[in-house]
Amino acid sequence: MKKVNALLAILYVNTIILIIICSRSIGIKLNSIVYEYISMLFLIWLFGFFTLSVINIISGLIDYKRKDTAILLKKMKRIKIGLLPFWVINFLCYIPISGLLLLAGHGFGFLIVPIFIFSSYIVLCLTSIFSILYLLNLRRNNIIRSKELIIHTILQLMFMIDIFSVIYIIKKWGKSKTA
Image (cartoon, rainbow, N blue to C red; front, side, top):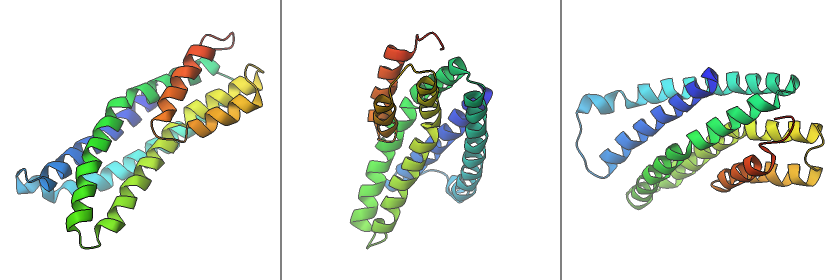
């Protein structure tokens, strides 16, 4: 669980960076030193995020191989529910930044906005790993059907819908005999 908590922490560092960038884009003046170190902080965040993501994926695969449904359920709940504030703040910051870049970017915004969307989708996919592994483990134990596995796997790869899917999964299969 420490690895999952570390991944959550590193994602919230991203949120702080976004708030700083958003505040500058809407005209709030902060100390210039803060802005000088944003790029360095972002690179550190990027390295930390990908490192912790790989570590968490390996950990999840080990739990899946051990057929440890209970720990996969615990990690799935922690990562998906723990990221709710992250997603809210993330999109509240991306909307003004994207709008400003599209309006005042002179074409530059059309390059940056897709990067925002792509990076958010990468975070979504990497945090959906535990949910998908949990579903695969349920399928392996014949608790769910293949059709349910496919549907919920697709839902895990869609913004906002993944949260509703996790809530449904927890309510329906969270108390199963193998969990």
